[in-house]
Length: 296
Image (cartoon, rainbow, N blue to C red; front, side):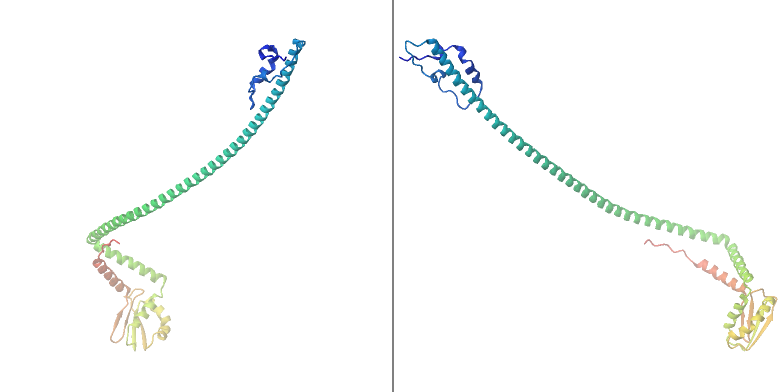
């Protein structure tokens, strides 16, 4: 009759390796007690208990070794799968990180460009606004300056008018004398450097005579000598001249002459002309008014 040996009857040292395998995770767990999978040993009254125990221990160790190898293989497969998943996740994470970085760089570049554009627009707006404001201010300032300048010029004109009145009142005689002296100096200087002035004076006087049948020309003795040289030219240049008489007159100074015919007398003394000119200038000076300047 067969005999069943329970696990608690097997020496504990036979389960040393089995206990070490309990630390591995595996998809297939032992559903039944380990001892139940052990083969049932049939024995008879004549078998040796020590030999039976030895065989059972060997079988248990062999099966434990197989299961341990299976657990190790399964663990290695799981580790490889996990490693592959981890690598895939790492690669995906790296790719996603690179994409995030590129997107961040793109966003920062766009933000920088937008900020730069906004700054330029604000600067241009401020520049245009400042230019227009400066232009308006400049126009207003220019108008104000023009008004101020007009007022100043009117004040100056009034001051000159008052000064002229005061000057004329105090120095009327002196001014007239000054004008005569300066004019005399100018004419005298002209006669000194250009003696032929008398020729032009005579020509001008002859043009004012209508009757040129017989003409008498009174000259300073020195001018008379010069006119004798130009007498033929006068007869050629002045039409209608019949007889031309040159008469010396010591009362006349250089540059003066008197031209007469039977009915007319032309006084071409430059002193007389100068006096007339001074009188005209004096009259103009007294009648000229300083006009106020109208603002533009």
